[in-house]
Length: 364
Image (tube, rainbow, N blue to C red):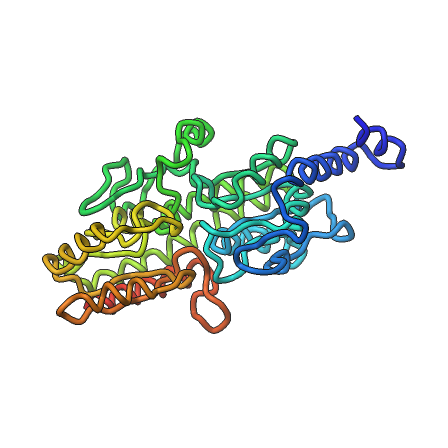
């Protein structure tokens, strides 16, 4: 009530009062959770990772968007730039190289999210360190679009085989989900795999959903651009499939640092025979019995490579590889983040092409 009285005493419009109430409400609810300096597992104030939203840049046509991960940020930025050019107002919270499972938003970033017209999050528990912030902002009236829940998510634990679902492999006529909102309500955090972006058809559908959502406040150009970006993702997927076709069926077996490639194996005809860290998060810890069993499996399956994540330390993977009699390569993929300048993985499409090439080389 005191906030409302203070705001009403100021010469603000109704929308400005509503937005500021949301900002201050979020900050008050998070005060007990955040330290005085703010905390970021990746280090520093990462509001600079993307375009910073400021009041002076406000525009009735271009909605302000905050995106959690760099991977989603690439797709959302493509849509917004297509729609309004350099005047697009997209900020990406996580810096390049951040582990999305471990990242925590600073107090400045929480305020930035609370001011945005739309927050685009991965969801399904991927942003483990941001769950409270996202829930509090949504409770205070913020609009949070959690993409993974809208895309018919797969269950976690897709080991040594395919998860059965309604998608035909490499089908060019994949049908869009009939009721994304109903799908979102049906899937609880923790039960399903959040790493949907390793299925490029799902990411293409995500681009269409995001474009349609942005069109509600930004105009039809956003929806048109969402369709255009989706088409580009689908075209890139054909190149990814061509690269992966070089790998014989008998060699299409993967060992990964954590359970992040379930969608990849399901879409592109691979199988996962083991993971170093159990579960779908990098924050778990394997025990000695699990590691011994994994070494035995890798020996039996004649595994050629262990695939890690550029955002995490590979020391444990190196130790595992050294336990095997044969030469086993440790290959770092771009899993939770895009690559930096000159990495060749600076956009989502480039990242998927680089990963496909690394996998093909590692299994040759």
